[in-house]
Structures are given as structure tokens and as C-alpha cells.
Image 1 (cartoon, rainbow, N blue to C red):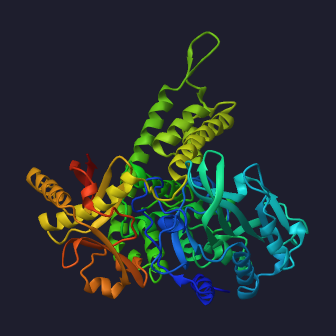
Image 2: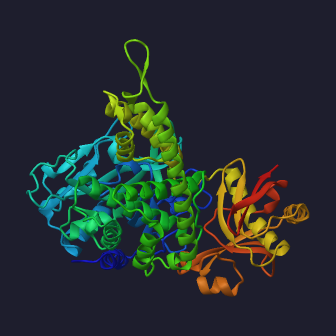
Length: 608
């Protein structure tokens, strides 16, 4: 058996041997990118460098990136879908391209990991009116002895990547699949619709630039972005058809088994519930345990955290866990993963306290829903043929049941159980009505998620760059006005405004807000220059540069200084981009100051 730790290191070591520099995982909470709620892929934090900016670590990069995707949350429960996952990734920023990328991918899979070639298959772009069929990628696979029957040509919806909007780098993909069924030999012909072919990796071949709707040109900088799912390839390496049996999940499943008193293979629904609990609490633990950690709430990332926790609780109740349990499962997750992601141990108290509080809240909500359902039981009725109320034949329709499911988080099994206890008959078309309502709800959720999650590369507009630079001014000013305990805890920038979260436990006074505005505007009026320098992390520290969390940086960093080198106003480690002179920013105004979470305040501001 190969462990997750060994496999993660194997990937990084292999690509380091090919000249790639290792970079740390970025935060799960995107900095200055309003197009996504969470970091959804390794390429997301590398936005400026895919667009041409120079990376301090060079043109070849590799890492294991923490990711969260919730657009497919309803798929979780099978053997290989997850909300939180680790994306092993490597990149070429205008260095090597298609042939070399495919060669490295094939060597890594078949020689370094020794996956049998007869269990592998590949897909390439089929071509359309904007770009030709990708014979280069297909030929590259064939050069390694891959049969044509194991190469599938797929459309743009499957094998093409591009940004949302009308501009940015884009290009075809070539995906790698592994036959996951241990009971049957892999078929000679690759059928991508057969779910037993599990996608384990993807090379995005960014050879074009989108210049308008349906308009493309050859890119001046051609990039490679590889994404390899750690959870899936770990299962493949250990001949498992279930990611939850790997060492990334099995200790969590064992804890859930102990809490519920049920075996993992008790029945299909128990297996599904245990997977959902393990996945959702792992994702919630990592989001709250991030150094930009987010607590459960009713908006944005906090809403996702709340949804994950409450869905896990519902499934816990379904399999017989009666006491509060989420913090107990989180303890296992923290102990399991903190040697790789030390922030989990640093933020353990925050994670456990929020889980306990959320579970107590939701338990009360569930009880309130149960009382409401029983009240409904007494007023639900049906008239007999004479128009008289017949309390012996009360009917529960699927649409009404879905309202309880959506409002109170009642699992369907609980709804049916309570209905049976209260002598309420289910409508003749109960299941169809309930499922129709559920599908409509899921489609609305998926549409909303897609709007938020599409794209994912940071906004590089002129105003967004101005707002990004302004956050440096605000942070330096807050430390002068409020004290040096102030550090950035998160930011969100659009072309219309900026939002900055910072560590501070008290509401700012009107005098403090006015003082911050005054100092920032005074600096802007001085027309101070913004200079960028590359240096080692130790040199950056010696130069007085601020860096919120040191373990998120590589060995070489970019340091942006506002003001003269020996008399600067702000000096921070940052990826950029920034304006050249802060005189370009205009007039700064704070629109709102409010609480973000415990010990964290939030400023919303505009440039006029």
C-alpha cells in the first residue's frame, strides 16, 4: 500500500527532477478574486503568471493545492466525488509545451507510479470552428504505444478550458483515465461514458487567447497546467474502487462507524451517508481551519460551510448518531492532516468551537421543524364524499414534504418515519413530486454556483488593480491607527469596490474611521511610487516586509514597497499586480465598517 504522504511527495519529487520549483499551497479563500468563492484549482492563485507576469520561482512550478468545489455537492456519496480535495499540479509558464507535457505525464503514471498501461485511456479535443482537432496531443500519446482505441476525441464541453468572459488564455485539454473496476478487465475500446473509467489527471494546453465572443488567436505565451487528483490516483495506486478506503478517509470513516454503531457496508444508504459525513466535515474543517478561515453564516463562503455541516449532521442522524458529533470527527481530521497542513492545528480551537455552536443551533432547528411537522399532522385532512373532514385519511403530498426538507433540513427518511408515526398517508405520487421539487432546487443551486465559480482567474481590470494597491495602504494605516496587532485576514475585490478583513476585536469609532480615511488620502496625494523587488523570504523579513502567513510563500517572493526605499509607508510580500504610482488611485472613502467573525472586522471602501 502506498500512503497519501508518499504519493504526494512522489509527485513533487518527480517534477522537481524535471526542473520544477515547489511552491506552497495557497489559501482556500481566494485573495482579490471575486469570481470564485473558494480556490477551485491549482491554477486559480497563479492568475497573473498565466497572463504573463513573471513568477519569482521561475517558469516551471509544482505543488499540492487545497481545493474546494461545491457545484457538484449533490454527487458526493459515490466512491470518488469530493467537495474538498488536493490537486497535485505542475505548470509551464511559457516554457515547454504539449509534447513535453504529455511525455512527463506518461512517464510519471507508467514508470514512476508503475500504473499498468493496459488500464489507462486518454481523451483529446475533437475540434470545432474555432480550433482544429488536436492531433498533436493524440500523436504524442500514440508515440508511447497507446492504441487509437484508447484515445477518445471529445467536444469543447469536455476537453477545452477557457476563462469566463471575452478574453484570456485558453486551449484544449487532454485527460487521463484509469480503469477502476477490479472485477473486470479494462475493455479494449475506451468509452468515456463508462463511469468505471475514472479521470485521474488533466493537461490543459493553453495555446490560444480569447479576444472576443467566439474569437481566438494564437497566444504569445503558451502555458501548461496539469491537475492530478490526489484522492483518485491514490485509490488507483492501491487497487481500490472507493476513495474512502484510502488513508485520507478511512480513519474518518472508522470514527463515524464507532459513533453510529454501524458497519460501513451495512447497506448502500449507510455507505452513502458515511461518505457524505466524512467528505463534508473534512471540507468544513479545512475551510474553517484555513488561515483566512471562514465561520458558518448565511452568506458567501460561510453559507457553504453551514450547508456542509448541516448536511453532515442530517446524515449522521439518519445512520443513528444521536449525540453531537461533528467536533469529534473534526478532531480525527485535524490529527490526520495537520502534519501536512499545519494551519489546522493552529486554528483547531476556532474549528471545534464553531462546529459545536453550529450543531447546537441546527439541533434546535431540527426540533423546531419536528414540532411544526407534528402540528401539520393535526391539521392535515381530507374530505370524504359528503364533504365532511375525515381525520383517518390524512395525506402528505411530495411538494409539502419537500418544503420541510428545504426549510428544516429533514432527511426524506425522517419525513416518512414521522408521517408513519402520525398516521399520515403519503400521496399516490409522493416520490415523484418530491424528486421533481428536489431536481428543480438542485438546478437552481447549480446555476447559481456556476455563475460564481466560472472563470476563476483574478480580475485584472484597471480598477481592480487600483483597489488591490489600496488594500496595502489601508493595512499599513490600520496598524498605525489601531495597533500592530492588525493583520489582514482576507480580501475581496471587484471593479466597483474593495473589502478588507483584518484582525481587531472592537468596532472602530467614527473618529478612527475618519483618521484612516485622512491618512490614506494624504499618502495618495503625495504621489508615492510603488516599487517591486524579488528576494528570498529571509531578505524580505530583514527588509521589514509584512507577510501574513509565512508558510504560504515559496523560497523567493515579490515585495512591493509604497514610498521611497529608506522611508516607505508600506512594504508587503504580494503577488501583484499594482499601480506604478498611488497618485493614480483617486479619493479613498470607507463605505462601511462591520464585524466579519469573532475577532475580525471588515472594511468596505471605494475610490472616487
